[in-house]
Amino acid sequence: MTQTITPQPGILEIALYQGGQSKVEGVTDVVKLSSNENPYGAGEAAIDAFRRASYELHRYPNTDHTSLREAIAAQHGLDAARVICGVGSDEIIHFLCQAYAGPGDEVLFTEHGFGMYRIAALAAGATPVEVRERERVTDVDALLAGCTENTKLVFIANPNNPTGTMIGGNEVARLADGLPAQAILVLDGAYAEYVEGFDGGLALLEQRENIVMTRTFSKAYGLGGLRIGWGYGPKAIIDVLNRIRGPFNLSNAQLAAAEAAVKDQAHVNRSRTENTRMRAWLAEALAEHGVPSDTSCANFILARFASPEEAEACDTFLKRRGLIVRLVASYKLPHCLRITVGDESSCRRVAHAIGQFKAGAEA
Ligand SMILES: *Cc1c(COP(=O)(O)O)cnc(C)c1O
Image 1 (cartoon, rainbow, N blue to C red):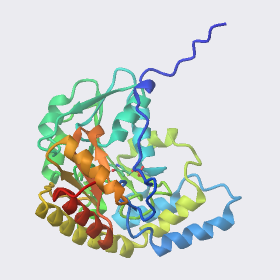
Image 2 (tube, helix red, strand yellow):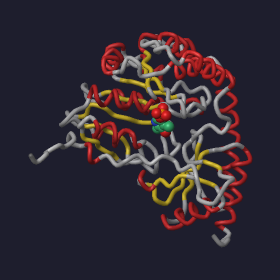
Image 3 (cartoon, rainbow, N blue to C red):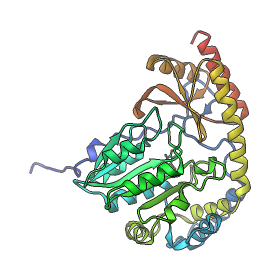
Image 4 (cartoon, protein in one colour):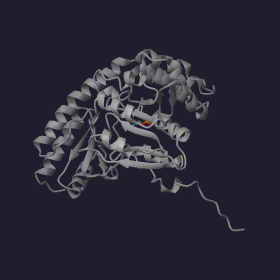
């Protein structure tokens, strides 16, 4: 018999995800600035909770995540019944696409938008639709013009990755209010903690029925390796997402560490303060070396070079010195390098090396 085994339509269009590189052949003292990880790691409270969870490895985890949801709700002033927790915010993005978009439906995002939106749309059999940005900034008019009667989801990250730029609350409100009736606006707040005093759009969300927010413990909380994220939105939508959530999607260790982390805001505040200080320093140092960047609101800088060739040559130059940054050609930014804001010594090392590169040093 001739087999005719084929995956669902769209699946083979998904390019395998390329994570940030973490090793360089022959170099030992490597600094990884390619995945927007917290250079200060997780907080002590989260690490302690994780360690304690190791004594309960034989126990199944709680399925409704009540304790973590209540901690998140208390921190942000939310209704715990409308919080959903997932394996990174990636899983929440997948739930949204799986539950609300299928064949014939469109999932909208911007040209330099996060790669997971396309992957999740295709995995659900829906059609990813990309709209242009305005000089590396989310363009609300372009998004509204890109909507059709088939648009089910509109994703924006605010601040955005890999551009680091963000749009104001009025613009987000204009987007939410201009969407067709069947569409959900998803505000991806992966970097919201890095913006002092920013609620990620929660106040706006509370006044609408068509906004869902996603958040993560992977960035400012320093728990990228543990995979925990959450979503918040109207009760009806969260109830739908919970129907497709695996009952044991989060382990005891994930739940315990995340709960301890959310109660340890001192760690987040330290991470934000240091990030703000070193981001300003790094942007200015690069500008002095003739490498401009947009004002970043996140924990990375998008460094612009004269050409794709120069960006690639600089990437190679940095790698030879053990400095791993991110080429973002797949985000339609082939002349740029995304550089995570590391601790002070990493920032100094990368700025110094880029200075040498621009001064024409031998690779
Ligand atoms: C890093 C990042 C996330 C976080 O993903 P997790 O699955 O929570 O680790 C989400 N959105 C954007 C735009 C990101 O850059």
